[in-house]
Image (cartoon, rainbow, N blue to C red):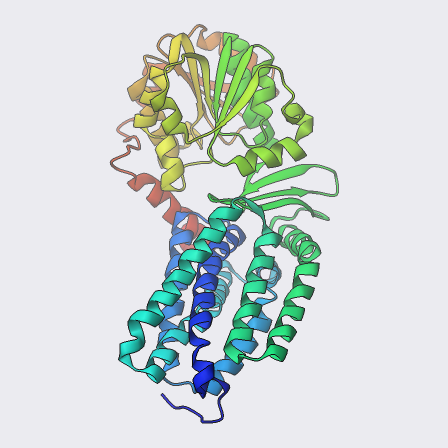
Length: 502
């Protein structure tokens, strides 16, 4: 590669800076991967396929950097670092503004293309440094320099692990300060370092207000939340959790950009999923897999002396306890407790029997959630039901529409339980299954109660009728998660390629 004798990094003293530069660059690579994947996935209401595409873009950015490194002089690399530092000071806020604006002006394909360009911009600059320093020092320097960058990356992931679930602006603040340190190390100049830290300090000072404003702008433009106000925005180890309040005072919970609570249909959802079996079976103890707004906890507590919520992501529970107190009483319901655990592990590792197990988990558009809607999971649940216990789950679609998700979930229920009722309220976009060893109520009793919920008439089936409706549909199984992948592909195609997705 070309060099310049006037370049600040060419002196013997400056070469000592190569190691801190690469260490900090490695740290930034880890931090960028963490919050880029979280942020871009949420901005695109991402399924697992979107996450995969963003990951491919992320690592493609490294290839771009490696390719460019041999064609850029060291003075140019230094200037490029400074330029990208200024650009990155706007992240993640500028990503939200662009995504919101594009949602109004351009189709999904253009938005996806822009987000991919952003992914390249975030990481390619860091991958320029390692090959440039190796070129200057010679091939023998590769082990030491590469090991330094890897140690920085490991340190970055250690920071992420230490921070855990954190407010989005806090992660951005850490990232901006680390990038300022990189600028100081690249220039190996006190004035440059102080200037970069001062700019990062301004960004840190403004990050909280910018975080709220940019996210409110995005949800208003992309989802039509009028006068949106951001109440809670957290990067957890599992997903991005946002709670948004509209001008009307209604609050919405988004998990990775997907609405999980807040619309009228989703409020009705909790009536059918949990309140219905609670009123029909009067369970003494209830287990709820998943949390969301935890409105289901309030319904279960009306009959159950003991209610247990199992949620893998504590950030969801903390947000709901703080901002959905009107439906969950802020966790002050007698007899309620929560356990931070994976639902599969919890069911498979305990012995306590439950009179009601209600599954309140996002639809199976990813492999992780797909495993909860599998036949294997339901067999675990059956083993934890009391003799007259009830298992309640949404089919994530209407069985009478014949959708592949709804029929697959129904098939898993039918293969697992002896007593099954599947009901589809007229005004609901979902069908629901009530199942057990032997249900302690009839489908006529269920139909009468559903009618009182204001959902219109109801289509209700016993096990034989449901089996006829499902036909030869195959359930999701742990050794064959292909259906969630197909569902993710269809959902992604519909979002980003509307003509092909219909």
